[in-house]
Image 1 (cartoon, rainbow, N blue to C red):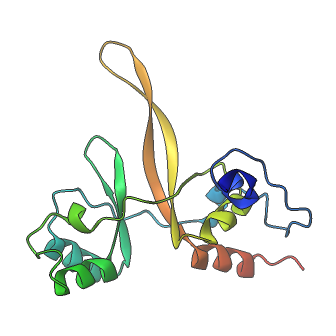
Image 2: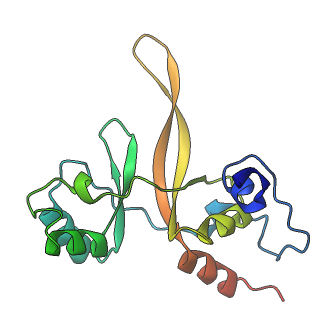
Length: 165
């Protein structure tokens, strides 16, 4: 069961890191990864256009975000191509038809240790930054902005470049 799985508890924010022998980078914040700005797709982009954009820009994946800022999920080049070729989606379908809606989010202030736990099960984590926004009537709310996409390669690159043996 999940509640006795420390990695699941850490990933979902129910437990602080319990690893006893942490590597030097474990408590460094995610913001130090120096991630490049993400390519964002709106939900109405067609599968064909998504493939073209990802290939042209050299990306394997991109978050799909509604104009309201709601993160709908992640689209990958391989899944989009596979879905279209298998007949599960058409080139003209909106990219939401092939979007992964199961994904992990992590904040800029979270630790690389938490990211490491997420990446043990997931191929990526969407890095978000919460920002306070105010409406015309003065009410405020927190809005999540996609800051980047972190992968195991990003973590490995950071660790190898900054290795402190």
